[in-house]
Amino acid sequence: MTARPSSISSSSSAVQSPILDLQGVTFAYGDGEPAISGLSLSVLAGAFVAVVGANGSGKSTLARLLDGLLLPTSGRVLVDGLHTADPEARWEVRRRVGLVFQNPDNQIVASIVEDDVAFGPENLGIEPLLIKQRVDSALAAVGMGAFGRHAPDKLSGGQKQRVAIAGALAMQPRILVLDEPTAMLDPDGRQEVMEVLGRLHAGGMTVVLITHYMEEAALAERVIVMQGGRIVDDAAPADVFTREHPGLDLPPAAQMAQSLRARGLRLPAGIVTVEALADALRPLIRHAD
Image (cartoon, rainbow, N blue to C red; front, side):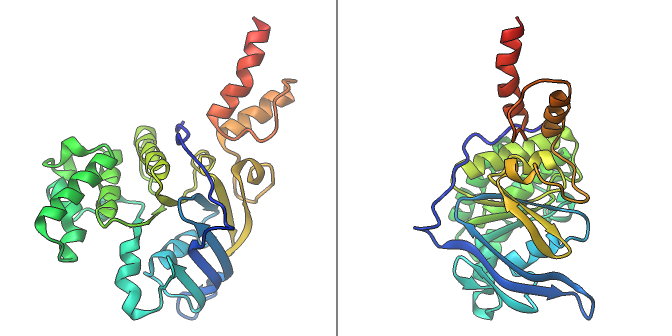
């Protein structure tokens, strides 16, 4: 089970413009049915947002729209005030949004870790000394500073995904979008990646995490539920996971709390993380002693 990020805080929308702003966005692949339909969404800088939904709900399409890899059929996508459909802004959009995919092996292009992390900055023509500084900083941020000269194919799945995140960080993005980054990892690898995301968010990074693990979504400050290319729920985890959503399970901690309530334990509503469950059980155990 993953640990809750150490510092999660919200910013006031009254004093801050959204860093991600989607208005009436529709996207269809070819002549097919829209994968995204009339979607509007705003995300403030520094937020940690999880996006969940059944297969085919439009989550991965949304990730690619945020990065400008896909352009809306209609509507607009603004990234830090830049239109993704503006050809002159396209590279700047992709610099500001670091996109990490599901399979780390598909993202690693070099035979040495530090060379792989340097790949993006090198393509921007950044001066070599600055690239070295960026690579060192990015690897340190994901806890891989000691692995710079290692071969990626010798790393574990979690370590490879941390290298992929470092590659995105080396571009110095303002937003990190991750499309099911732990789907192919074992529990230890998932733990590693979620701890990295917690640290990055605590440091001010805007994180959009697409996941099918509800215990990961429970660690965010906001959960967006997608269905049929639309947003059907958007609230704090404790609120989202008190409502029924077809195809979505409760986080394990919420399931356990529900089971314990059925056995007669008086637990508060809104328990969705292991940390919250432990906090609720602690006084009951002391009382029993």
